[in-house]
Image (cartoon, rainbow, N blue to C red; front, top):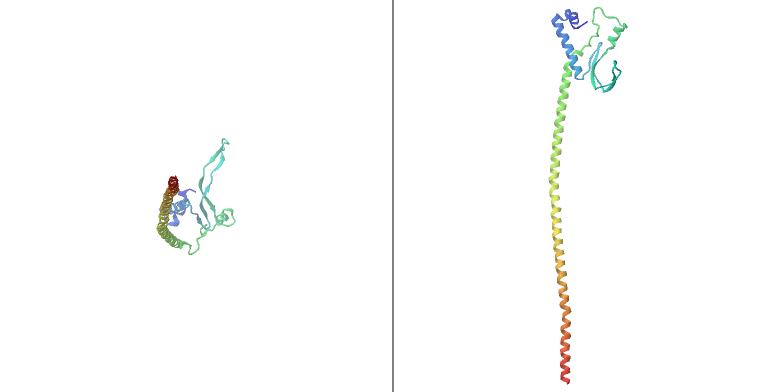
Length: 213
């Protein structure tokens, strides 16, 4: 059975061939789009469609036997439901006046609205979380800026005191050097004084000798 025959098979049940073609196209399009997006499409009693990722691997060319590297790829996979398997294997018989695929339970068809509501709520929660993170990041940045501003004067003060200490030390060293240079001059003067006294004594001795003669 191809697509055209499938449309003809359900045309009487949906009100015409055009409606049947539109229904088949809509169902197939929805399945393909959901599978490509990575969602699992599950139909109770029929089966499920899903996307499967295959890692890179090595294979052999069946004609030459040469080893060939196969790139990483994704493929669609269909798994038949248990009801479908039972009908194919003959464990269960096809119903004559009912659909072969198990009907959806009551209330399950209204799940679309609830799912939409859940998605909207999830989006709002995500938006709130993002806003909270941004606010926290701003507060953290503000705290860091304030802490940096407070620490900056404390860093400058030691620099000034160090410079002052260096200047004072340099002044003291210069003063010590000047004092050290002046000290020898005083010692020299002290040493010269005895020389004058000895000269005076010699002169007095000469005068006394001259008087005795």
